[in-house]
Image (tube, rainbow, N blue to C red; front, side, top):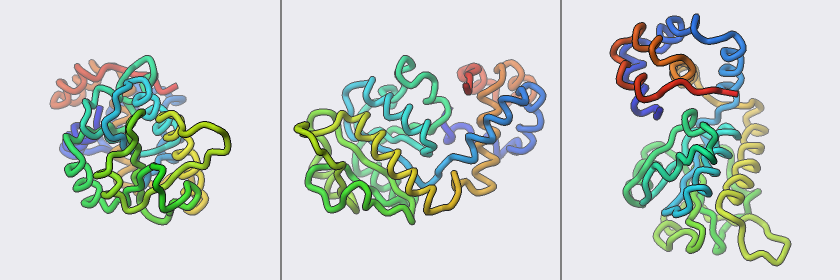
Length: 241
């Protein structure tokens, strides 16, 4: 369930009130796991894919992004469903924001409004992977499996970077490139922060409410918060193993 759909309702009911109402239905072990996950979330790291065509590769990016604590995965000029191949994401798409943008201009406008630096992976690079800045919010942009980033996307990037290759291979698979970049960037980001995550109190409270809501049987959410009935009916319960 995307934050864009959940957050207005959480604000209406009060995120803290939702957590307290749902807490009896969430095991202590699950509560502890949620807190550990929230502690490692990086609001300042996002990922985007331009025109992916292989749903398994795109969904693998979602899985890596969620596992490494990134905040959102954007898809440009392709259906958001391509990020949700259940056999590949293993349910991780429920816990990370996925957003669709009809075109590059829309994506760039959203990133600029959010104050995100857009860094694109391409051969014609200005920086190496290890040189990406971690002292400001960053969105890591990748092209599709064949063409890479479009010329327009490269031009829209504040930084263009490449991942070192020491063998005969000309490039990395999309999902591998994203995983390598995310691992390197999030590790350096956490070292710079001196902490595992960077959620402020408000963002953490909202995300906690979303995790609790996603963790319980939807019937409990419907009884406690009738206004959430439609979301609960479509969300279903998911694990957070």
